[in-house]
Image (cartoon, rainbow, N blue to C red):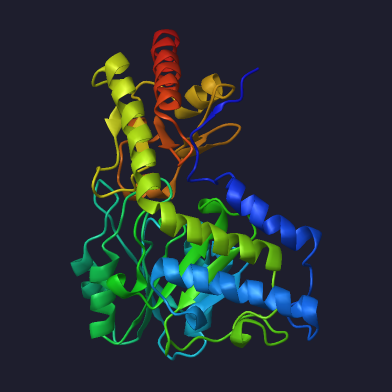
Length: 380
């Protein structure tokens, strides 16, 4: 049986062959502890520093502003909880479409006496910066708005929000797990104070991430141990994966424009193929030009997304915009926040291309998806 066409790059990416080859040396031979004083330790320490420089270069930061973590979820937790530990303010502003790695932290903080304002989004999943400014209170301590949404690909106006935050003396954090490596994520251009990065969204392994902490941003550790990562994130460094993340960032910088064009071309071939088969028999939930170049949030009215995904699962790997339980279908909070009609939300799929997706694969996937849509519309 042929391997399914993989179109769920927003969930995770394969490890780049260059990255895999580079990290192998740290598995096979260079396994020293970076905190050790002998040669093997120095080699590992140098590898971590090189990776720090590679990450910093990609996002326009200084190397000493990069803190390595285990994943973007940890980076988000460290950013939010670490900043709040040193502040008196008890109010946080975020959006209604954040990843659970931000949402769940905010829900926890609400049980600890913090107040949370969730900024609404329009029908395309985009916030309005003026709504953020209106939500600011005298005790607002932090604003956290993602750069790009994992489900819809919608890009938020984070540079405008950062400017608002700074005019009011508020720290601004962005979860950039979905955007780094797909679109420019320059910390100077955007003006962010904190930025979360995920390795496995940019062709590095799962289990590694980073947090950009702008020089002068007050942040405290939320874990306790030795003094690694300037004391902000203690624990023996995961040299293998940190080196891999650094290499992935180097490749993303080198091949960024080529990869963006490849992802967008594959996306467009897929969309054109669907149009050829279905005409206007689908609904796009995201707006091109305001979303990631690789992402389609697309609904096929009259077809349950879970049935469609299951129907084609052996041929095409995609995600749905809802969670299916034994006796019900739960619409995702993102699609709810966009106030999509239930019939559209339950028919929504997320299709996300990657740098390895070819136009031929995209066209074949369009044929498969469209064929399944037409068959399900006849039988349901």
